Length: 236
Image (tube, rainbow, N blue to C red; front, side, top):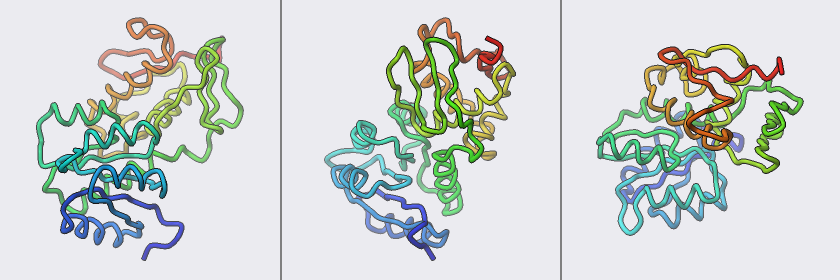
């Protein structure tokens, strides 16, 4: 049974039966669940209730899941999993590009859904043994994992939870190549170790936020066919 310390999941769907199905399965795993039947109500509840995860149906009347996701991302970095009956690759990429953390296609099994929710909630939390002191990579880039602050050219940059975890594992191994499978397992979870599309997208997101020139990155370097390497700032 869920308690006050349990993670809160917001389920957004215009079908009451789907909401009840998801609620039952999440509560069996000790999550607290609240719901919304449309995008406007979802945005309001994200603002007021600060959920730990949002399950967001794409096919909704008035305002679909993509539009709702845009509004949520304007004010929150809460992990969002899109739920849809459409399995087209372009919809999946569109959702991820808009800021979704994962994508589950209906029909799905309760086990798959719970596994995905646990994974995105876990990714929202940095490892307990984070670097306590701020890290000065160079004059342009400083990172403080303890306070979750990134400063680029003197200005703060906002990272989403998955971006934080990815940056953390890259910087923890600065100077070393981290294989694709290792990053996927560490950041997303072992069940995602073949989802290289996720990794490519989030590497791009990070580079867009911290690199000066995307065509010539100086911090996150690609080791073709192997993985990625963060520049060895400790030797500078």
